[in-house]
Image (cartoon, rainbow, N blue to C red; front, side):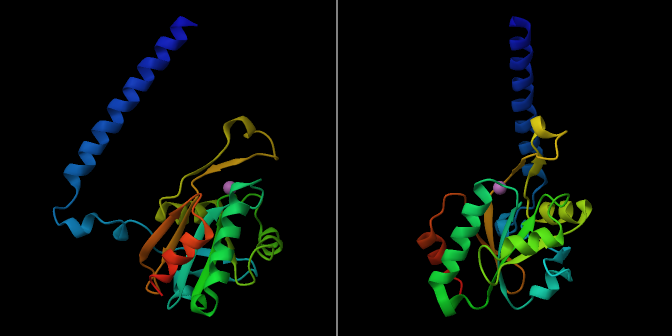
Length: 200
Ligand code: NI
C-alpha cells in the first residue's frame, strides 16, 4: 500500500511539473498582441455533421444566425437534460428576440446517438433544437474545435450501457461563426437569457 501511495505522489508531482512546463512553453509560443490571446480565436470553427433529419450540414448552414451550442449525449442521466432545459427556457424567455438564435445539441456519443435517436431526443426540449451527430472522426473534430473534452467512463468501457465524461459548457456563437460567450454548468435561466440578450 505504501509503495502504491509513493508512486501516486510521484506521478502527481510529475503531472504538476509537466503541466507547469507546458503552460510556460505555451505562453512563450503565444504572439505578443493581447487581442490574439482572447478566446475568440480559440473556440469554434468548421464542422461537417449530420442533423437529426439526416441532412448533412456544416457551419455554413448556420451562417447569419446565432448558435447556442451544447455538446453532450442523449443517454446522459442528468447533466445534459438539465442543461438543454436551461437553454430552451432561456430562449423561450427571450421570445421573438431570440428568433435568430438556433439552439444546437452536438453528441459526443456518436456510437449510440444515431440520427433516429437524436430526432426523438431533441423534440423533448425545444421545437427549434437541432441535434447533430456524425462519425467518430467528425465528432472528434467538432469537439476539438470547441475545446470540448469527452471520454467513455473508464469503468464502463466494456459495457454498452456506458456513461460518458464530458465538459458541460454552452457556447454562444455570432452569425459570423465567431465565439461570443459561454455559460458554465449551473448558470440559471435568467442569467443565460441576459447573457444572450446582450448580443442580440
Ligand atoms: Ni451529460
